[in-house]
Length: 346
Ligand code: MG
Image (cartoon, rainbow, N blue to C red; front, side):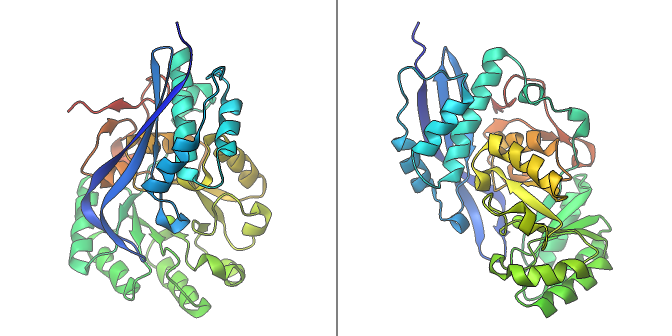
């Protein structure tokens, strides 16, 4: 029997349930890249959701995957060799790299027939409630989406801000819902005065976390904002996996780790260890992803303080089944080997 490893990939356009707006753009579809690693009759799967904020597209992800040359004697159970091979294949392309690494972890879990949370010694009793994201939209549509999310059992709403009417959005939501709110400004507050004013306003509105209040280029201002905020401030665009965590803690209370930014599950585990050691809180976030990448994120969220893993829920196309939301949108993982993701046969 041949034991050589084969790598395949395809791109797939996925439709969003609602047009999704953030402070930079509005989208109705995403195009993600799916990776499969096969060996010994077992196939592991991974997913890339390339983001133009980080200069990655499905085309650049595929161009990267085409460059990977798998040696005849590669041992698929050796994750370190695989990660080295991906590193040597080229710079950047973190979404493609994490997809290829994810697929191998899935393969390894399936090969030895255990779920990855068990392989990584994680306890599913630690699972968190995920936020549910409300994108930027007209006030009426936002109120409608909030009502829908509340009816659907959401216990945390993650509200996208960074518009020119942020206070109006929060006031409108509070007319229809008293659910806990996290805010993601997506770099939208440009001056310290504006950011300080918003932080004070949001403190009175049961907002319990704020993601990326100011542009990533304004770290010096974040150092001034942090001591003024009672609400934890979390770095997203300011944290891509390359920054010094000892410096980041001067401007933020925590970091949003997204697999598509850091490019490696093994590195994400290391970042969690390092961030905890300097006192940073951990958020696990996602891009708009199917259950494949969201389930990989859900595994990491067993070590986190905040989970924002609703990408699969924002899609009306759901080609895969994996992590689910239980009561209160608590993340529920299954006991299947590997990631625990199957093709959705519905
Ligand atoms: Mg964000």
